[in-house]
Length: 142
Image (cartoon, rainbow, N blue to C red; front, side, top):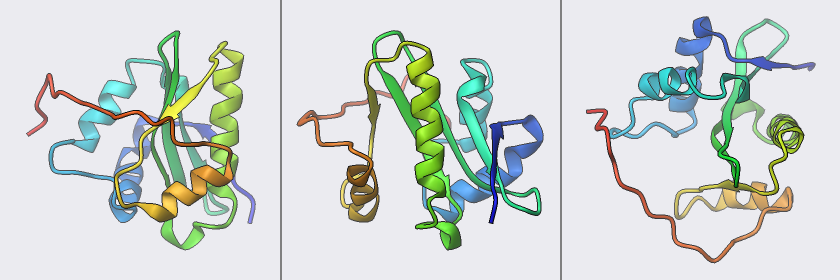
């Protein structure tokens, strides 16, 4: 099947939220619609979706570059298409876009215990930086 990668559009919101939910990426403390609205205000060109042959959203992800490091968040591929190469294609496009911006390194976070996803990123050349990720919520979503 052929896929078309393109920038996110506002009318993709419902499909992207449903995709993220089907992939287990949504957490009670993160409102995905608010995350989408926030991303629309900062480097929206780094929010990509992939459409399948029928035009429906089958993959999506967000990237960003702060001038020091790039980040990839919310990368998801429709469960029945995982392993098809679509995730690799989307990551390659993020890496290309970030490289074009002068980004020297890409970071991403994987939830502890998610060995399948860890294996996916390792197969793309990502490795454990031996760091601890800390977070602090500044604006509650709930």
